[in-house]
Image 1 (tube, rainbow, N blue to C red):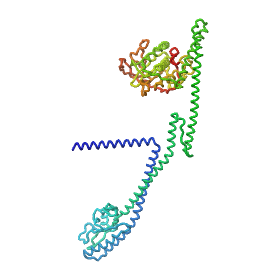
Image 2: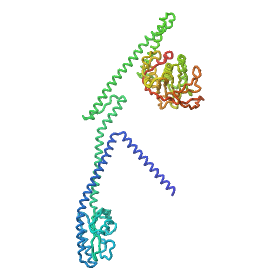
Image 3: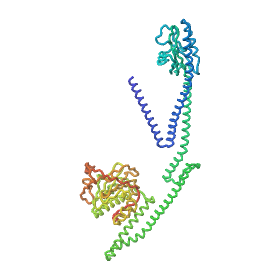
Length: 614
């Protein structure tokens, strides 16, 4: 028995849970439709407001009809009852009956005349001795057996009749009525006090009107109002749906066409019907789309012409430039035999030819990206070894600037699916830029990884850059100070090429800077080709305190600890290889997320490998 009860309870709980889940799904579906569909919101709001209006109007009409019908019938009932009660009172008062039988017959004959229908409603009567009467000849009489029940007459009405001589009335509930199929029916009772022999015994006589026919009329009216309201609500809902559909459908079509236009399907147009406002909107939209298509096509053609021009010019300049470079090399090697003026001229010529060749190589590489001809040759690559190779190549430049170039990492190997040539070019750009703008201060290369990505951040503590400058640092040929002579930097296309290389890897290349506190560039690569990046393993900028001891750089010099940008608490923890890391939060300056664009500075010409971009 207990097992069956437990199973029943468990089944009831499971059923309630299923019902609750279904209710939640239905509520979620309705909420979603409400948020996404203007037509649904309009139709539902129209139905709700119409329902409220119909309920208010229906209630008002029902109340007015009931009051009018009741007042009219009540006036008729009151007039008939008043006359009947007055006649009965006079007959009983003037009777000459002297025995029980004649008095009983007189009472029955007189009251039976009240049983005839009056005022289009059944009418009944009740004669009842008042409390405290003794020795009366006529017992309680009624036109219907059920009328003798004491619960029929309200106590207030009985008390008023017993204490007064006037006529009184009160609403009552008739427990049984043939007109209502045995159900309770409303009624109204009129009463007064009468006297009968012997010795003027007092009785209360009641005339009761059955209002069931009037109640049925009101119920019928209510049903008609409900049916009419429901039909009207359905009609209004259908009208609202049709009207909103005729308005919302062109808007939905315009939204769909706009999405296709944004996706590059410039030939898409709206369907225009009629000559109304919606049709004019569609025609204007199509005219706008045609104009945009023409302008985009024209700009695309101009862009192609420009790219072709740059590519053609760059290729055409390669041959004469090679000749000029050979001549410049000959003059540069023989400069010791020249006088001081010609010697300096030969050196300047050699340097500028080298710079021109670097610029030409960068232009050719940019033209490949613009033409979509750049190809990613990815292979399993140890990023740590790529960074070490870049550091080895940049060490002479670091020694020239007096900067301490070091790798900061607890990693010993980071394998990624990448193109080592392009990743190396990105890192060379970042490292050489950091050295050129680091003002001889340390430059640190941070490496970290997580299960999905590897990040390399190049941090310098030099002149830094503002938020606006960080947002433009990847633009082609952009310089923070246009008036500054190009004594440092390359062609101005290095960072734009780096952005394009990062884009081929589905990687992030981001910049952060603070005037006087240096700058930081962070490259985040997915470990697998085509992987999606969600978070970078390194903050931007990385934590400012260095590992103790640092991973040794090529020079093997002891590291110098760089203080953080502001006061902070230090919590030490051991890295995987036993390196103690000082954990300091990054500075409060937010990083600038730089979208892939173009432009920037390139490494020193002594470090650039010409084979990479030719």
